[in-house]
Length: 249
Length: 250
Image 1 (cartoon, each protein chain N blue to C red):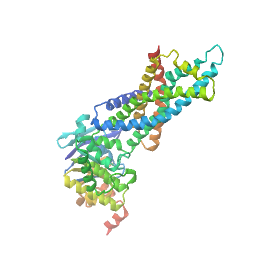
Image 2 (cartoon, one colour):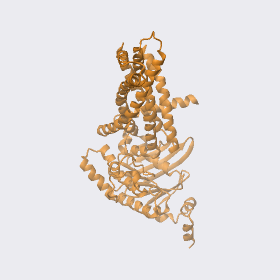
Image 3 (cartoon, rainbow over the protein chains, first blue to last red):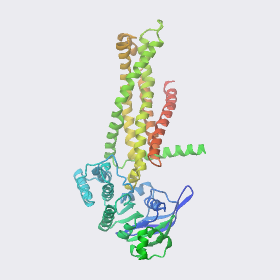
Image 4 (cartoon, rainbow over the protein chains, first blue to last red):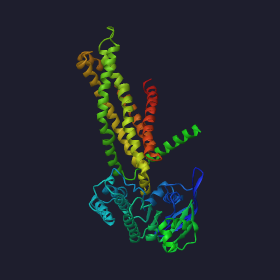
């Protein structure tokens, strides 16, 4: 479980996150939704410690993450996997080397064991016969899946995904969503997903928080989102004409 | 304002160095990285070093010959001048300036691209000390290999001087040139040259890595960081050249 309490973050005096409090539960896909520039990525990066927060608390289980020193944070980070918006695969390494990297760094497994684990993770995300390809030789969807394979290589307790569907076609986006949900349930991970894709919200939004201009306005599930009375959320959810037409009907 | 920014830059530079020299996560991984960088930054620089050194030695020989045409100067001075110029200045400083262009821009653009494509964030999230993982192997590789490049440059530079001076243009005989390069040889000059090389290697790697590591923005900023890496490395090499010469030769 990840708990955020009264989090504030600003850049050059401009507040971008204001008093955010939320609990992300294990075994569930927790979604942070909001417009571009609403502060979703800053929130996610603050939670994982890539941004120093101004005020507030971040708890990973019963560990006060933001109070830890560099070395203690590193230990918690070994339990995290993160999928970045642009995949962030190491472009000078092959697919196999990318997925093997955390194993090389933090385990004493033999090469045979590592390759077995790499193949298992790649198989889990439906990537076959691509071990020796470089990231530049893969499609966007494949890159995301390899990044997921790398993120789960060490069996993390926490999985963070920053806009996993950005730049993908709807079918591939659905596959990525389904994959993240399956993995979350399978390993009982605490998964946080940043998205502005309403399709993802309706497919996998077990717990959703909506933020706008750095303020949390709403919290609920995909079953509650369509009946919300929050005006800002409704503006976001029903922003496209198709949604508006469906509501009118 | 300018002083504040200068102090901030110096502070960030030393904090980065602190992170670079902290204990590596896994020695075997760092060892492999260092071997890779030895090839990438060191072995791949042999060609350019050899070409520059050959022509540099040739030009120094011809210039020395042109300036010592007066018969009161013994001809072997051409060889002596060529040897001392190459050992004392050219093979360490000029080769360092060339490597600042080749290796420095390479380091800054590689690390800068990793920064803007979130690969450094990915390393941090995994619990890897990104500064140490990315910079330390490069630093070790250049500190180990650049002295070898300097020695190679000295040999090829003197050979270039001999070849062009004696075999192509004929401004001096082979015997006179060889006598000149052996005359009043002070072995400490080699030590001095190697000390400078090690300091310059550190400056090139650390300054370029700093420029790449803290880049913000996109490909345009990575290009700018790469340019800054070359410019700042070159300026600091020249500045430390004066300081080291004062410290080691006087």
